[in-house]
Length: 184
Image 1 (tube, rainbow, N blue to C red):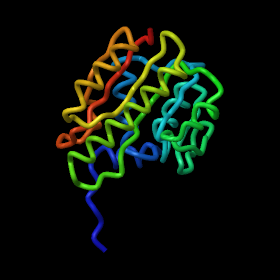
Image 2 (image 1 turned 180 degrees about the horizontal axis):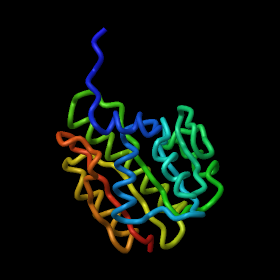
Image 3 (image 1 turned 30 degrees about the vertical axis):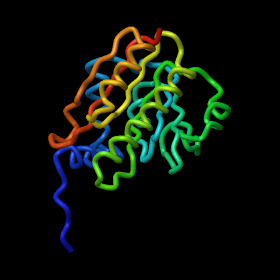
């Protein structure tokens, strides 16, 4: 039985009781931008397995975790973010919308990048409708020809937009995080 070598972030996550290595991406973003505060309502899109929801709960937030797969932390909402019913399901307004949504990659970069972009556009649409004024938005997007247009769209909705690659991202990964600061 050959076991895949675990990278340092995966090992650390397991040792510290987290569900996935992605926890360190959000912790890094949180340290840098202080987006989640105690008592905030946080919406975590594409939440499974739930490590981002786990961090938000630890920070004292009330979390709605949206995914088709079960999420252990926060209030699990079984829903497809691409289905318009999501707008009826989500009843409240949020201080923070998180999206670590990722396409089921097929290895054809152009298609994978386009699906990543489509997920981000949807996350931004949800954030625009469900985020309180002054709220924060974090969204993962693969670097591609759709990157700049997405940042431009995000700038229309937020007072400040930052592009950030957290420490927990794999060096070879093209993923970047767009942080929308203070919804207009």
